[in-house]
Image (cartoon, rainbow, N blue to C red; front, side, top):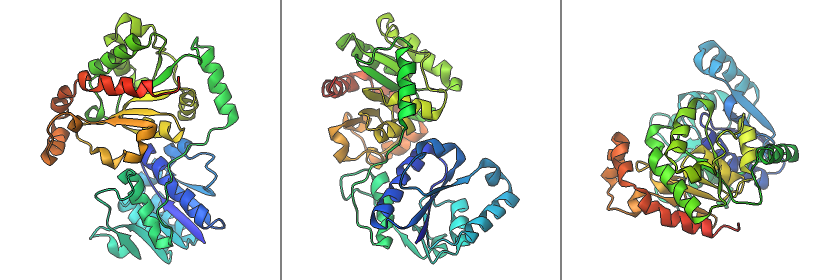
Length: 352
């Protein structure tokens, strides 16, 4: 059996959908499994033992009708027996249909259902206390007679990558025998970013609680201005514990550095998902516009903690919509006073 799993675009989505590859391989060890992803997301699925081949979709293919058509012909030429379209947008709709695979699986949408042989409705509430992101993906495998099983995304680093990161961190005057926290200081957008002065206040509270705490900031060069703003809002005692210039020059370097941290703290997003996939405990601050159940399951509470404004003030369904339109209004209500104690409790439960 030759299987193609399609998950384009964002790093967090590509990482999460990789669980399908593991589940299929465990059920059908002899299956040949290909995973179609955008080129820039490769670092999170590199070395994954459940993927036989990565099929890469580039920005050039996306922008050129001719290149895209050639790509579709290559997919058909591959003669897949099964195509699972997790992405479910126009480009993947066409890829699935053009494959002419006998079994084409995706989520149900009225205007695209005819392109697939089997579709299903997304769950609105978890059935197994996992996140909806996990449960909805694994539900697609029912058409392959694969029942639900608890599988979480995993990132596979090499020993060389881990050792190189350790050398970099220690030569940067960071003591790995003392608590080290990676801070996701910025979300994927302003609407998903906890106010910078509020974030600084949380870091200050951690240093007051534990003067040996050390912090690394997760940011890319173009985000340096915003990341530095968090640093500048911090107390001088906290600033001395932040190693601002220590960060991965590539995504794999960031992952290897994160593997040496005791926890990741900060905004919900790809970085948090990657830390979880490295088996690093996480403390996540969700945007007021997002529903926590989509990306956080009750079963995660053992090693992970997440907070949302709705846990602290009266919240209605319409508040999620309003928070999307005016995120700053809702974020301002989500003051550090709500988060400090859960954060301290989370840190206290770590084996530091």
